[in-house]
Image: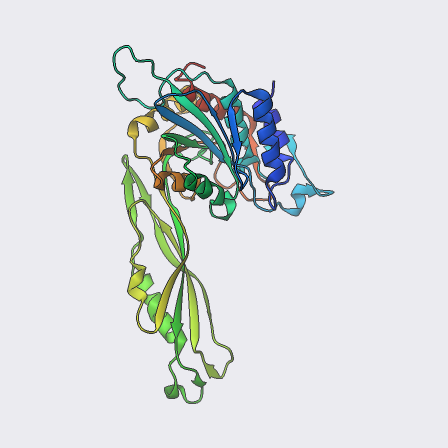
Length: 372
């Protein structure tokens, strides 16, 4: 029987930065071999499996695409996977094939006799759930797989998204993230009138107009939100500027890029920069996430507490994940996974083997109602 470590190693060895097909094939084949679940593979490559039935559904959610590997993580065209010092090293170990493997093993091994939420049941009722496994494509390029699945009706009641939540409250502790920031990327373009730099009064300097927009942005406060007593602070900052064509020509166009880290229910008032000569365009808007059911968050926290010697906490997370798309669609979400801050997308990416097993215990504890 596959262990979480063995399955993680096999998944990580499959390149999936340019094309997720082979990794999706592996996941689908494993699920068909190891379970009797109803399994679908949609047209974009998402793998979704379902077991059991009930009034409520609990999904274990991950993604099997990765960012491009560092040169040190590839040898003869193959991904390098190494185990040393109690950790598995390689592209995708932390983000997030380790969590996918833990979810796959949980999906195979769990009994599902109880509801995933703490709702009261009628006398004599037999509270059961539908257990769902989902591994999406395209998370690293804006959640394309999750968005497609949602558009096609993917709507579990609750979801545990296996992105990193380890090491937030204390080193080595796997916490439960009840909220995370989103990201809105914008371009502000100011238009002017070109003229020779020796006669600046003959034109309108687009850089100056863009500078006025920058000053407006500098005066804005980042948004903030409170989720079950945890503070989530957003930010807004100009990150790029481009304009001008020559040292002796007044620029007729100047663009600035704005990075805004959003929080649930709030956005910076960027429309203030717009006028007859300045345009604001949103290039990307990855939604933030906030759990909308404290009872579910506490249920997952209880499972996390029982799976480790440390004291897990409800925390917030700075990075956008597919949980944002799910929460926007009405799914009750938390984030719980083995990756630690600073591991994802690095040349030294790795994951703790002990924490992989811990996440399996957490997921199974929630899926089985605490009966591991």
